[in-house]
Length: 326
Image (cartoon, rainbow, N blue to C red; front, side):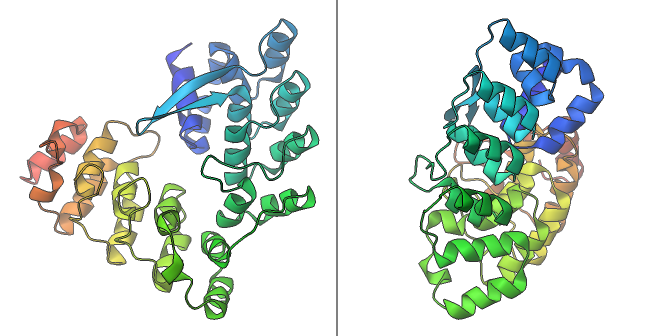
């Protein structure tokens, strides 16, 4: 597989289709890098030829993130990349319609046409994640009304809590609905579980600035960590998004908070993310913003004793040195 095809699949695996599209635009021939790349790139002729020649419609690869390994199939890459014509081909050649990764992440990204094809081929509309939460509930929480309507029309029956509807309204940036839900359920914020408290970080990951501002105005606390650790500012810093970092700082996010997982402040996460970033990430600008906001050195050193410069990219390391932080 070509290195560009590798990067393309990594971007899709990380649920960053915008980055994948940029990679594909720079190298339209990367579909030649293998069957999975062809599925993600939407190369119908190449995929059809491969399937006719005996390629496995359930072909997959392993993806490791944060110490956890997932199996990502050809159907997953086609769904995330929004390639319904490829989804149809794969299903017609025996792809598993109950592929949870494909269905769940297709729902998260609003791939309605791909999901409709999976449902036509027998996908359970109440397909559940490992934690027991259904894809339907996840769609509600993501603010994907179109996906939720499709699943309901196909028989989804999972129970939705007021908190799920509240988070979904916030994700859509629908302030009127969110406030109406809080008026009707005034104790909703007090009942949040760890995943609920992580919704603000999820909004960061999905680059939904209006949702972030709305959640903060309703009482979602920017100091909350989700089940995977790190405050919303940690995640914005890791992504290398200076606009989200400045927004969160304006909303009162603590610049020197240590995360519970690695024991480092957001500037440490920015340094680490700078060695793993893609696309339009600007970790150097993030580090500048954090330093301007008063980031200090001691909290940036993780519990293993590693300072930010130990894993920073060259541009970020240069900022740290110029600002006399390292």
